[in-house]
Amino acid sequence: MFRRTFYILFTISALITFGYSGSVRVVNRTDNSMDDIATLDRLRGTYVSTKDVSRILAKRDPFVNEARGKMVLYLGDHRIKISGNSSYVLVDEQVYQMPMYAIWTKNDIFLPAESFFDIVKRTILPGINYDPRRMVLDIDMKEFTITRVDITQKANGTILRILTRNSFPEGNISSFFHENGWFYLTIAGGLADTTEIRRSDTRGVVRSVAADQLGQTAQLAFQMRTKVENYEIYQSSDPSEIVVSLRTAMDNSLARIKEVKDRWKLDTVVLDAGHGGKDPGTMGRKGTKEKDIALDIVKRVGLLLEKNTKLKVIYTREEDVFIPLWKRTKVANESNGKVFVSVHLNSNPNKTAYGFETYLLRPGKTEDAIEVASRENEAIKLEDRSKGKYQDISGESLIIATMAQSVYMKESEELAAMIQEEIGKKIKSKNRGVKQAGFHVLIGASMPNVLIEAGFLTNANEEKNLRNAKYRQNIANSIYKAIVKFRYSREQYLSES
Ligand SMILES: [Zn+2]
Image (cartoon, rainbow, N blue to C red; front, side, top):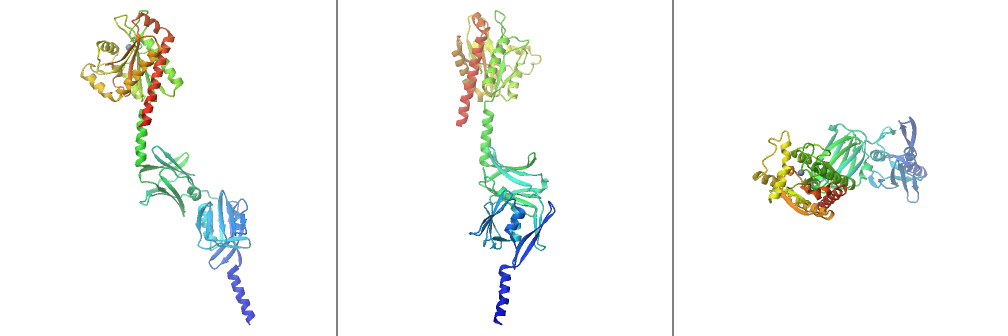
């Protein structure tokens, strides 16, 4: 009697402790194959064999550490670490907890089926479905549709790129900032590779990234370092991605600084060859025309800039054509020019006058300067429809035009001084200095601007020199050097501010 009771008790306890062997039926829809996973069936549910799960779902054998009762399962590019007598599972170092302990037995680990398959589905294989009632594991090779998040920090804010395999209807994407400092992005119908997304490198305003799959809805969450002032979200199709740009107060001010810097950055030079076409400008005794010499020098300067710098060069004219004065500054402004250099040749009834001078737009101080400006302004008379385009340039209107340019005056002065200095180094002529007068061609230029009178064609010796290509190359070299120096000093100033 005693022995019999003992036997029955032993049988019951053995059933509870070791369970009885059963199996989970595996249906693979990709190749229509069937398989079985050995199970332990306990009162609290079904446990599946890790070795069998690995055999069916993994491409390589698991790593088994018998002494410590641990196994590593390799699914796709991911690693799942499992320990016997523990309820924790590590998917690529991310911890997941199951409601029951895994059981180490017979050199294998048995995992609570329902919760384990749920973790695998959420993290690595979205195409698996486990039916605990029927004990069937259904495998369909579905792909994640939200695969990765790239975070970059730009001057104007932090950009989140959520890479997707397809685009989603606009209504499926919703986003909001929670007062807890998290930004939530919900994508209905999206299947997120949560493991990969959680591994995203954080940058900029993003402190950490979280991802979860809730049934048919993917939820991504981004923890912010500071308050975000505004954000934009849009979908692009090539590449397929959801882009979120986040801006903080700091980003906004940095973006403004960059905008200002870009606006000031000397990247475009406008070169203006005086006169042209029906307007020859002044003429030397040997018939040398100002329009030809000016164009030649300008082209040489442009060539040097194009060859040796990354500056964009804009010419108001590249051939022998007539261009109205008003159009020259218009071209300069419309091309976003950052400096305007006009090249001319001088004349004087006094044939002994010689040398080079650079002009700024300001009311003329000397009779000579006013005389030079009024001669250069005469081109207006050759324009077909000049009426109304020009104001009287004496007196008050010139003062107003000058004031409009006062922002550029200091820089125009600097550039003029540099040009005079550089030309002085290169050619044997007289440095007549920086002067000022009212030139129509300079009016309205929204950038530092100067007008160079490179020499007197009315002076026999200077005309002879200016007919010499080498002499003109020297002048061009000097102007080129001055522009490069000017740009450098300006960039130094900008980088300090
Ligand atoms: Zn001229």
